[in-house]
Image (cartoon, rainbow, N blue to C red):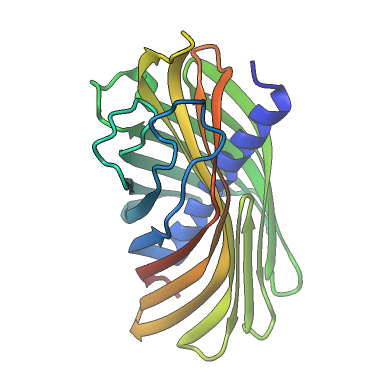
Length: 305
């Protein structure tokens, strides 16, 4: 069984990645993005693995679309749909190995409820059911991950340009509940030149060169957890589900192209990647390291003012 600390780290990552999506909802309302990574390979493979020396690349495609907002008095409800495809390609595509990644799909629906309770205080609830699968076997309840977040936020400063949020996150996946805390920070300077968002594990910090151009830095821990077709490896250990993760760190350039439409470019490094395989009891059966990569990302969004 993985230690409670390691479990908590993973869930905090997902928890506040969801907070990032909330920020995306109120900033970049609609959008599509494409991310490509340079060639890499797995490390720490078992002896005789068909993946040894088999280099790979992967691309990520994202799209998100809002649903009409609802208002009940002071209570606001926002919803949106997110889709992600991670597409892997290997040098030796003919290798038929159960460890080999192919395509991972994620469909994420989200409902956000916000209600002010004082002049600078609000309560926030988020429900995020996620379907994650490689679609190599029929869908089951294990393909569904359910997140629930409840928290409060407070604005600080004369102009309320700093907002700090604290919350509790509950995630249910693979017959396991995990509960962890989270924190988020939103900041905008008084002159409007600097803007920063920190939703662990995601950092976004930009400087406005003009009303149409921004430059800055971006960082994130990106990971996906999905169900596998159960099988036993060469040591007789049962494999139930997998997780692929990478830390992205880079620079960004954002340019308004027409009214509320923005074109965004990012580039940097994908660091400390890993591919983990787990048993039905949540033990780590395999933990493959992934070589560092160079990545580039292009995005077109419709951004609220």
